[in-house]
Image (cartoon, rainbow, N blue to C red):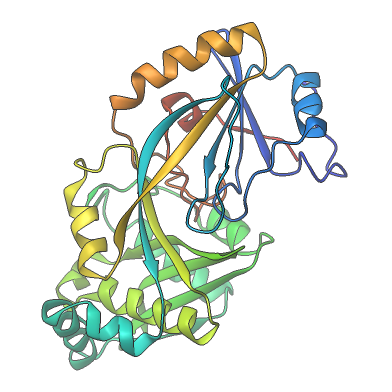
Length: 305
């Protein structure tokens, strides 16, 4: 396919993929900012031979009042947290979660904002390659190279990295990305041998503390097509103060083929997908998580930039 000029601001964050007979596009920053499907953007997508454009409605901060009848829609769920203050969050999460945070602190786990330098990259690389499995399933980053981690840490974007340390060793980290009316928990990982220290809990706590200090009101942990699947992830989110928030994903056919694609993919919405090799929400890169609403958007994504 012909590349899209990076000068075109409307298409800078658009990802386009060819799947079967269809060409599908979505905005990789759809959670960071509200997608506005202007006549200009539609014309540019059609010029790129896109059959179907897919995007999520960020209904926690803006809604589409009268979507065209030609748009199809499907429901998905997200784990969202509204932050009033750190103290309010800490009181609301319940005794068990508070004790987990205290447990980490008592066992000597120290958390702090980290500089994305070579030493931090080496620590992340070690975490990724410590086990092929995570607490909630497969570790998609097992086998990643140090060079790939360093490249991602140097990539552009407004993000913060928080490290969890035990005896000066990086044993876990969390990355958060800042969007419009939203902070995204990009990635959360820790060394298996330290899972007994509640590392992930104390990392979430530090992330919420930073969000509250920056007056960031909405925090997104993850999004799911099927809320009943992947129960361990959901339980972790709920125990840490996140709540289920229903979102609408729109399917906008731009061609006759797009109309056919819409019917096919809406019908397949029952297939639960949460995690993929890019386990991503805010960009198709190493530390990001896209909710994976359709299987075809989970594979071989072509970034237009």
